[in-house]
Length: 188
Image (cartoon, rainbow, N blue to C red; front, top):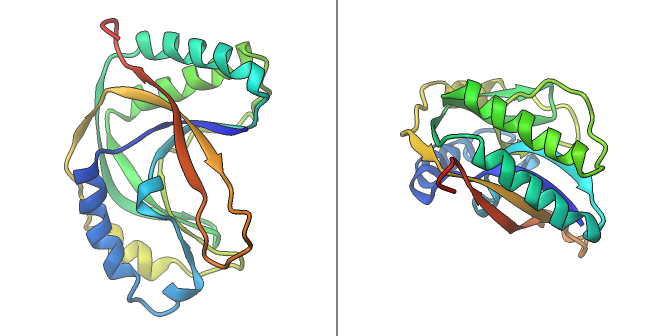
């Protein structure tokens, strides 16, 4: 199964960002982008890729320990940016050092469970849209510049399964299914 660890923003935060994203849909060229669906909005901590089902219990237990060692912390969505001409994202503010620590722990949990991980610098973000060809995201980033979402307290680490579309229907989104929720902090 295709898995990743993530922080899921609460519904009111998703709704707040969604209002701004709805405006971006009206910009020229927006219909050529593949917009991510709001039910799947998340801040990835670690992407694991295809994981054998028999590894999931060990990974889940190791993620529980990582969550237990990380106290709840405040985050907010703010502004935006892009990765080249391929992905548009909303930025993250707040206690980003703790978010990075949690991401490091989620990666370490995978390595200890025998899942190979790529060595790349963690860049916290929430993906909003992708493009198959190089796109000019500047107008979209400008539209996100003034966005400053309300803060929320991150209280759990989630292990999420990504079910990729199989129908071949253009615009069909992956479906995300939370496999495990691990509360943060020693009380968890």
